[in-house]
Image (tube, rainbow, N blue to C red; front, side, top):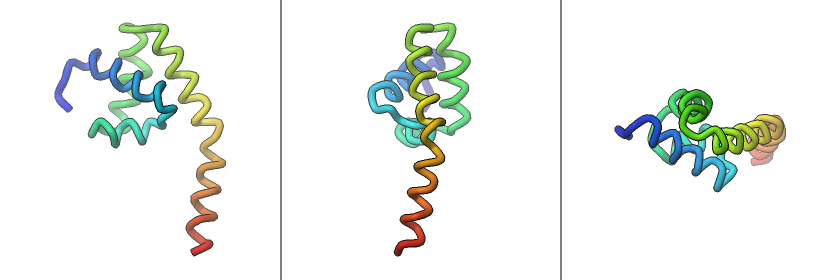
Length: 81
């Protein structure tokens, strides 16, 4: 995805907020790396749109708090087959 980094940061942020998406899911949807998504929403977005940045931080904090549950569920599914 070759675009203006600030524009891409806003698009990624809107995607994450609308869907409650993880960094990994956003990266897959936009065809870029997790590192790019993380840099865009944590560094670039703060300069462009501080309000949207705060919303993204809240979603990512919730995802981080829940990730151990998702990991446990994935392991459970893996070994139940």
